[in-house]
Image 1 (cartoon, rainbow, N blue to C red):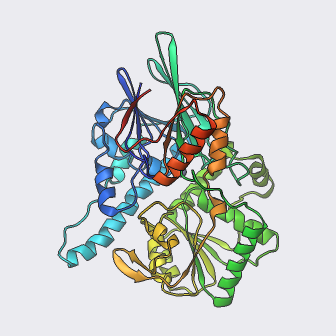
Image 2 (cartoon, helix red, strand yellow):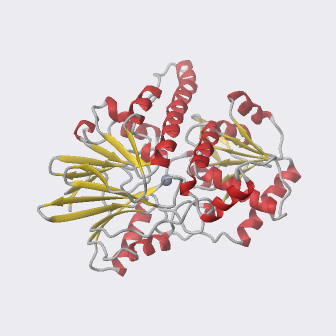
Length: 465
Ligand SMILES: [Zn+2]
């Protein structure tokens, strides 16, 4: 069996790993690269392997950095199925449609300016037609079922507790009475987070492909300190009649934020202020959440049956039309605007930042991971001038981080995940982390388990397992 790594190797975005057995190739994830524009364009067009040679795709979850390059496949000759959980199938469908639409809008906006400057125009990676073609190949599966994907190859999905439908993917290859199993963690969630069930304990495997987004960090505890921080922020917005702008993944993060704010209001810690969820995608995704109660934890299932719609409230407004979104730009606070994309690399959030970033009374709240070279990363790095739609823009708004809201396992969770595999795997590949995180996690695993062969693959490298 061969494994090669074509994305999220010593980096975070563009998750794509190719598993090859005699006569069959399976692609684990087909994510989109985000970061430096030129590099992202190149890597999203050149996948690093021939899609025609791929027999099937196994998708861990719907986030765009894992699923966003799927629509490129059919145009390059891929004719197999895409296996994914049922909730992921629903979510990925709307997310890819949205991705196509956002790309088209961003291209139109950028090209209008480029044309004025006499420069060549950019093209989107795919359009809604390409999305329709790949969605037709989706095969939604249940957690835990054994799925036969080729004569000697079976796969199964195991709840990863990261976003709705997320899974660790196990692949088993059997030949001449021997079998080899590979477990791909996808993105791992955390225990005791709202809405979703906790991550399932990992099933046994010979080879583990493990994410390392927070491989060298521990999250803050979701305790009193964080609630106080949120309370102060809302009070600040109220006093200054300012805006709190929250870039958030439309799926997962947004729904969780809504639950958290409702909790603070429910506990009488803050008076409600208007909250605008400005993302047609978040709106649709919330609908998908409602259709998949099989993914909820007990508490959410109970709230749903007791109180009806857990995501609704009189001070929360879902914004759909572009006109209403534009009206928010001119509006005065206090208010919270939650919008995507989560790393500020496209979508309505960029327009909100453009309008709010120069006012020192406004606050930008970062709740999710920000990959290198993205606008979100520049904000947390404290840049005084940031490029917005290519225009250097002074930043005067405060930037505040909330690490405790992460949907990712931290270093201790990742180490515990490895420890829970019984018997321990012989080989671990560390992926989906920047070099520093991946190396640090790799060293910790190696120190704890000297017999495991720990490897941190480079982009484009191939390994025999
Ligand atoms: Zn994810």
